[in-house]
Image 1: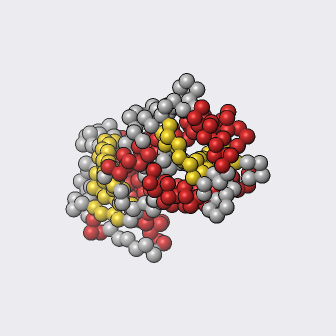
Image 2: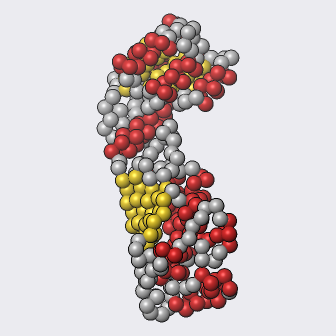
Length: 331
């Protein structure tokens, strides 16, 4: 197989043409000689001069040929003696997860076909519809497989992505930045929904600490005593020096094994040594000056401050599954 582009697949002259493939190798697996001949005839009719077709009579023989031929797609019958189509799909998911497998289904095999699809098969074609539907099915499957392969190969080259943000002291920006981070980690680094929620809470607390307590130098006791007065004072300080010109600096660094968040304000900092953290002390949840840091430390794997106390570094190590598809790296 030679990959030369990344465009949408399309039929050409009634044949099988997929952008991204110069040549296409198809392995047909069927224990019945008549059916192998039927499939071979359909493929030959749709050959634009770019197809190479191999045949195997069993799942066991198919695995030997996959190891030697590296086909672009496997087209298999479901009901075969010995290793049937379902077992072949399951084995390919372990040993050859990048090679798509398309099922050829006959009447009465719907249940096993559904199980094969749940176990990793890419698509199916009823044998009675091979003439009309095989070419279009292969085009769609190969096009998708091309994108998946290229994305996985690209991900193998990736080591680290770093993004930097500068936020004014506007609490409305917190949701926008946090949402962007959550969307990125979910889509490209496959962080779980539960972890994303906890991460969002921790980031929200850290940003608010940086804006209100760091840059605007507002005390937690004021918020506990009178939240309305707290926000009125915050609004007042946003308009006067030295507070109005201060910003929050945020750096997001994604690596394979961890995600690092660094949030720095331009305030005077605080005495880090006076911070108290006991994960088993529920009283910290009600303390006005400790609740945010308690949540941050609980939800993050590592938390550290600089000596001045105006910069916090938070690290999570997401529990990402190796089987999840499509890792990408752009932010």
